[in-house]
Amino acid sequence: GDGSYEASFSSDVCIVTTGDQNMFEAVKEGMQYAGVPPEVMNLQVLSSDTLNLGNDRTRDSITWLHRIMRFIDKDAGNAYMENPPVHLFRVSPKVPVDRALVVPYPLPDRMNRATGVGEIDLRSSVQGLEAVLRRLFHLRADISLFQAKSKPTATQGEQCLEDNANCKRDNPDAAYFANLPGYTLGQNDVFIIYGINHVKTGYAKYMSVTLYGLNGIAFASLNSEDDMEGTAAKFIPDSPNVDKLFAVVMARDCQNYANCLKIPYAGSKGLPAGIPPLMVSRNILNPQTGTGADFEELVPTRLMFAKLPRIAPLYKNKTKNGEE
Image (cartoon, rainbow, N blue to C red; front, top):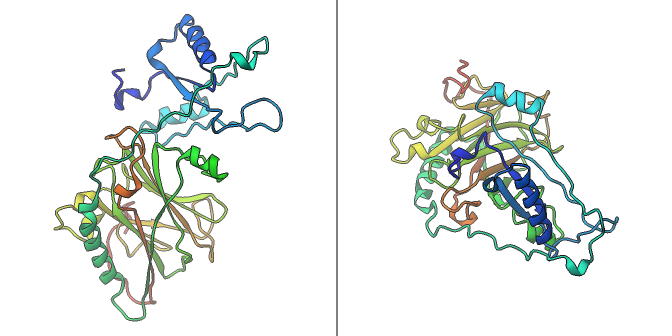
């Protein structure tokens, strides 16, 4: 391809993960001899500055995780998953190499996340959306309302290693926020997920919001390509930034709500009674910088909990699935 983000899909790629410069050059030469063009070669550095490299039991274990999100072509996606066209090789010298001959890679500099601008100008629009949601779900005094704040998660692998912390396999090409409200979802309760679609503001190529149970298994999700666009217009149709915002309701019964994720009590898409959800917002690859967005430049996704009374619906509309 031409090196662009769009051209990188459905294209060949070769990733060499190593801590030795000589090893990379040897693999690169071998791959070129086999007909692999140099433009598809990528180096992933394992630096001995942060890793305890070696083969015995006292050394660090390395996992190569291939994460895929959202197949546009469902048939092609199913074929890919049934027979992944991915090959993983471990290359080791036939003869042990003298450590004095190893040329280690230094810890690579990370790309600067900051653009110097950010989404601060949209805070007032988010606050306007929030005000409408508060009025809508707080029409009566016996409705309790609670807002939980999203917090950045650690995505700098080197910092996690230094602190001996668990980054949960995240990487610096993303900006993740987590939100644990501490409330459970009853039959007459709702969670309202709302905020900025960071793809629309140019601070992410893809955005998703995923909800997990305490077992770490996801039971619901929404993303910037399928579920967010146009959802805020139900609440603030005249806002000049309405196309950059989203608002989705999570409820046990969606028949009374627009833009709604229906959450049953059981099954793969269910959340059992008495279990509080964990919300994780993932913002992948800021196209302006080629890495994850700066946490300080994003307005985090927000989560609001409302405990509703057993009264007539607050509003009635179609769900996102078109059900009445």
